[in-house]
Image 1 (spheres, rainbow, N blue to C red):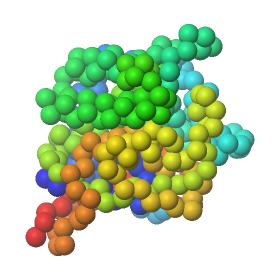
Image 2 (tube, helix red, strand yellow; image 1 turned 30 degrees about the horizontal axis):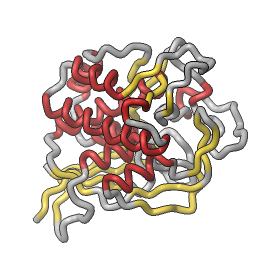
Image 3 (cartoon, rainbow, N blue to C red; image 1 turned 90 degrees about the horizontal axis):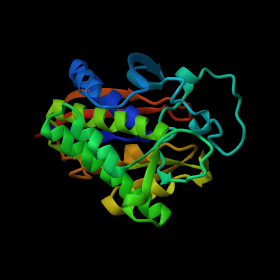
Image 4 (cartoon, rainbow, N blue to C red; image 1 turned 180 degrees about the vertical axis):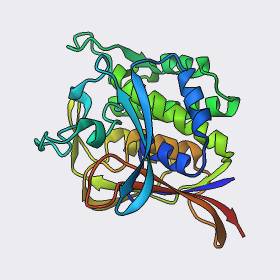
Length: 283
């Protein structure tokens, strides 16, 4: 089956999983796969939401109090304080902690850090199909390689903070399971639309596109287009998923749309936070 990812409003891990579920990936299969992973401290909510008047699927990873760390939830999305009266559970964008970083022994938080080998062990321990495991490992490796380049360190020295690791593990494994369940063997990803400005992470402000996203685009041949929108539309996890599945960057001249799915994002921008995915058949 050929997949077309239309990333007009960017792409993130949760948006991708939601769009794939909307395309018909089996929710029961996904939940069983996630439950088999040796990862704790979260729950998954799958619901329907309205974005720009369109019905869309929403995939949310909600961390428990023991694992939540609001230093990582990017409330200061553009580098200055925003109104904090929003509801974190609904407006909170859960790919907040996905940016990899170096392990700091003096880090003030008690959360654990996971390196790539730790995460690959978690994926191997899960009850997943061989195809889903291989794809999840490929996505995480692409992500870790980009973070290693961004920090100027060997791959084995890149660590994901526990909060970010839980989010990223769930998003990436979920995306791999859904893609495998749908039987996707080819994917067209013409361009990723990205925003501008700054995003706050553990070590301060990062310019958008963030370095890891730019590295993935360069290393994996993804096409970027910058929109006049302030905010991070393309996350490193979203870019890594797109890079791992992409086989083509141009649509067939003629094709039939088999099914369309919409995945909702959590942030609010001047463009609707939606990822549209289609299963297509060339004619």
